[in-house]
Length: 104
Picture 1 (tube, helix red, strand yellow):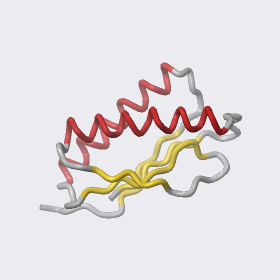
Picture 2 (cartoon, rainbow, N blue to C red):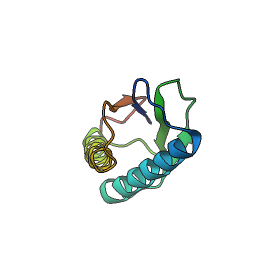
Picture 3 (cartoon, rainbow, N blue to C red):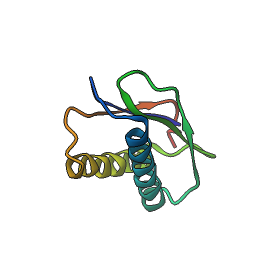
Picture 4 (cartoon, rainbow, N blue to C red):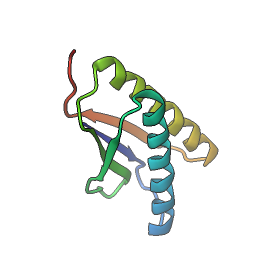
């Protein structure tokens, strides 16, 4: 499992804009998952803080190997960076908080 957090200090997005961004980021994560792990992935929302734009926990039925997890994280980060550039979003920070993964 991994928690993915996207935040931007002092953002002024309304609820609708945040929902649109959330759907975009979920779709990009699903695409990255399909390409890298080829396994089903649960996407569970996590409570957001004031400056958080997106906070979800991604989980797989079986833990990913460290190599597969790294491939997934790189694919997500790459897609998110491009999306932020295309949306002209500035001061956006992406972080991954790993909960667990297998070492085999």
